[in-house]
Amino acid sequence: MFRLSADHTAGLLTLLRNTLGIPTQSQVSVEDRNDPPRIELFGPRGLRRFLRLQMLLTHTHSQERYAVHELLAADEAPSCPGDIPTHSDLGASEEDRLLENESPGKDIRCDSQGYWRGIVVRTIGANGHGKSLDERRGAGRVVIDAGPIEHRDPCIGYVIREIPYLPEPPALRGPIPVPRKLVILGDTFNSDALIPLIDPPSASDDAKFTEPMEVDMDIDVPPGDASVGIEDAVVTPDVRDLIANTPVSLLIHEATDAYIPRDIDPQEKTGRNRTSDSVMEKTRARGHSTPWMAGEFAQKIKAERLVLNHIGARFPAPRMPATRPWERFQLACIREIEKQARDAWKPPKMRPPSDVTAAYDYCRIVIPPNM
Image (cartoon, rainbow, N blue to C red; front, side, top):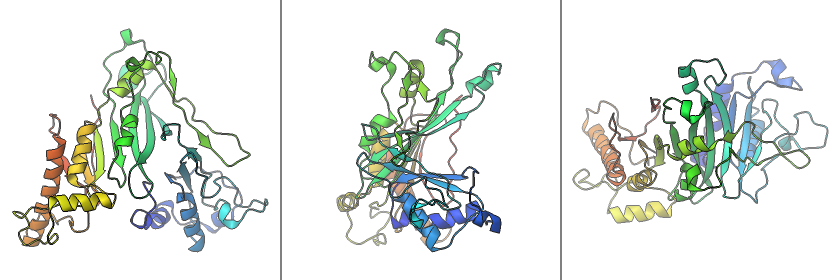
């Protein structure tokens, strides 16, 4: 979850209700459930309370459970407790207790740089001894970090990266596939604060990084409970170098509004008396980005692929294939939006060639492994 606003949260309850399934009567009344959550949500302060109140007020139950982990600034308290049992007799209000379909959630505070590192760490592949070389080369971990980006309201961007498993000494190690790295941003007009998280320093950048580095996680739970840490989050210097040199495989960046030139929109169907400068100024003032701004950020972080999302309602996705005049006009506007981002980005030369994609409903982007 990037931010708490109507357009980002309105369908969340319905999505959970449909995904988690219809409960049996015994599941609704059970006192203690230990089944793990099927869905875990990470987002800004208020997300847990927002969902819990919606579940309570609409009498929504589900077969499987969910959990909400709040990403807190240094001076923020959680919106509501994340670990008081459903049937607690400690005098907690209904809103402060876990729902019967809610798993305990973590309160994750940012580090001294304002980032939330390692909010998710998952092992993939076969890390054990005795596995084949190909199996070990494909093993490792997926780590998700988060950080603040600039918008009118608090907003978050996420970095998803692969960390390979390198058990042998470098001299004995075969070629290692370049890990993939994804950068997914919420609403923003400036995401430069996220760049140090996207491109961490390599071990060679600082002499002090000669020992394994522990990925620091400061996860708080309500007062009276011990802090919780993520286990096995250690990055050795050679892996750190590989991470630092990893290109951004995919950037997903918003492009809320765009100026469409007269040769495409001679009748000004996308807005009267608009200019490139006026659209840029108004878009930034509202905390959003144009396609050009998205392309500039893609160029800054040397992204290999760029997908534009959060495109404004004045630019509906055309029906494909576009056969009618109105559909062809819609398609021309989308292609112009992609072109503006491409001109600012100057995509790298790759095989297959890299390009800009304007996202649409149910759009699917496949990032193949680097072999």
